[in-house]
Structures are given as structure tokens and as C-alpha cells.
Amino acid sequence: MNAQKKEQVRTLPKEGSEFVATYFKDQKIKSIFKVPVDKKHKYEVTLENGIELELNDRGRWQEVEGNNNAVPFGYLKPATVTYIKTNYGNRKVVEVENGPRFIFVKLDNGVKLQFEAEGKFNRVVPAED
Image 1 (cartoon, helix red, strand yellow):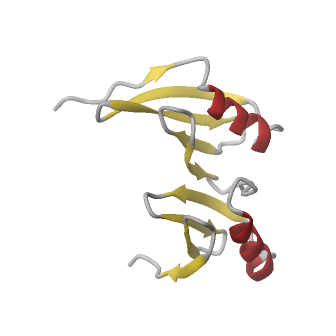
Image 2: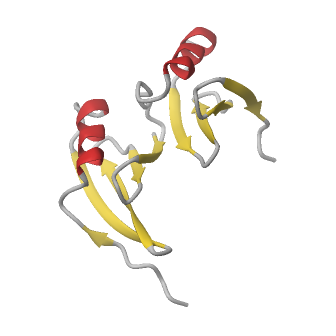
């Protein structure tokens, strides 16, 4: 079996660096790994507070995993941010995933929300058995 080799790197592409500086400015980067995926690669970034970021080869965010920490979500479309604040204002966002067609937002109570790419709420995703 051919295991994928992670390569520790010191920097991110410009878009990734700006994303971290804008939305995680109070956190220092603990590690950055460049991981091969198909014919491209992705970046796995761990911050000092345990939050993990997955960025594509250009540095665009794909996933933000809080690991029991609240994560910022101001990088989402305004309609998504408004929906979360209006309907779940007392909950913390603990994970955000940028899928091929939808954005998924997981809250600290286990509820997972699905949004259209343009930010419109789609549905509550049923809990996995």
C-alpha cells in the first residue's frame, strides 16, 4: 500500500495566509502540512488552540474543524451568517465544510445545517446512525 507522504512546510499560498490572518488572527499556526491529493495537494493547518484547517492547493478553505472549540464563520455568505445568528444565536459553530455543492455547518449541540453555495438555508442534515 502506498501511503501519502505529508510534507511539513513553513508557508501557505497567499489566499490561505490571508484567510488565517483575517479569521484566526488571535491564533498562531502550530503546523502546516502539504498533503498530496490525486494530482494536486492540500494544506492541513493546525492552530495552537487545536482548530484544524484544510485548504486546497491555492489556499482556499475547504474545512474548518474546531475540535471542541468554537470557530469563526464570517467567511461564509452573508445569508448563511444571518441564518445562523438568527436561528442558532445561542449555539457555537464547531465545524464548517465546503462541499462541492453545499456548505455544511455543525453546531455544538450536534445539529448539522446544509446551505446552498449562494448562502440560502437548505435543510437540517439528519444525525448519522
